[in-house]
Length: 96
Length: 237
Image (cartoon, rainbow over all chains, first blue to last red; front, side, top):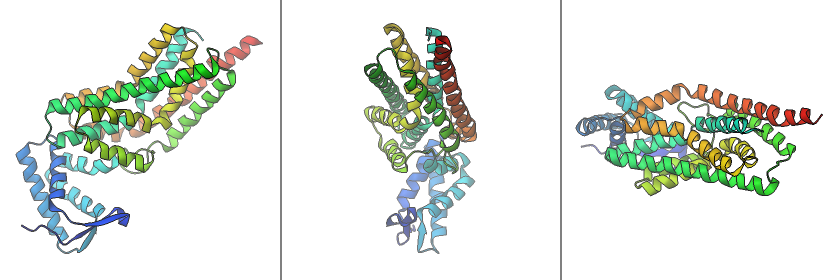
C-alpha cells in the first residue's frame, strides 16, 4: 500500500515547519469527521480508506503540497462519499 | 431605578450575552472531537456538561467580581458619569459587533486573536476529562470578555443599587439566561442531533445573530441612558 511518505506538506504557508505526508494522520482525521457525522464505525472506516487512497493518487505527481491544498482535495473527495462529514471536516478550521 | 426596570435591563443584557457565539463554537468543536474519538454518548454528555458548567461558573464569578468592584468604587449610588460612559460603551461595542464580530471568511470564525482561537481549538481536541472540559468552559468565557464585558458592567451597575436579596436574584437571572443558548445546543447534541446540522444553522444565521446582538446592545445603551440619566436629569429640574 502506497504510504505517500516522500511528499512534503508545507504547513500554514511556511509559517510552521514542513513535515512529511502521514497517511495515518489523514486517514484518522477523515475517520473522525465521519464518526462526528454519526456514521457507523465500519462505514466510516471504509470511507476514510477510500478518500485517503484518492488523495494519495492526487499526491503522486506532486513532490510538495500545502496543508491547505491537501485539506481542500480531501474535502472534495469526501463530499462524494459523505457530504455531512465533508462539511464538518471543512468547518473544523473555520468554526472559531 | 425600580426593581422591574432593573430586572428588565439585567434580562436584556443576559440575552445579549447569550447571543454571543464563542462558547457555542467551542462546545461544537468539543463534542465533534469527543464523538470523533469514539467516546460513548454518556462520556460525550459528561464532557459537554462539564464545559457548560465551566461557562456558567465563570459567568457567575465574573459578574459577581465586577459587581463587587463597582460596589467598592462607587457604593450603592454610582455617579451619572459612570452610567453615561457605560451607555457609550454599550453603543460602541454594539457597533463593533455589527462591523467586526465575524471575520469575512466562510464558517463562523470570530474576531478574536488567532492565538486564542488556536489555543481553544487545540484544547477542545485535547480534552479527555470532565475537569478539563470545565476549565475549557472557564477559559472560553474569558476569551470572549471583550464582547461580554459591556453587558456585564451595565448589569453590575444596575445590581449594586438593588437590595441584597434582589442582587442575588439578579445575578442568578443573568447567569441562567446567558447560558440558554449553550444549554439548548447541549440538549440538541445530547438528543442525537447532527453536529453538521447545528453548525449549518449557525453558519446560515450568523449575520442575523450578529445584527441582533449589535442592535440589542445599542438599544440597551439608549434604554439605560433614557431610564437612568435623562430621567434623573429631568427629575432634578
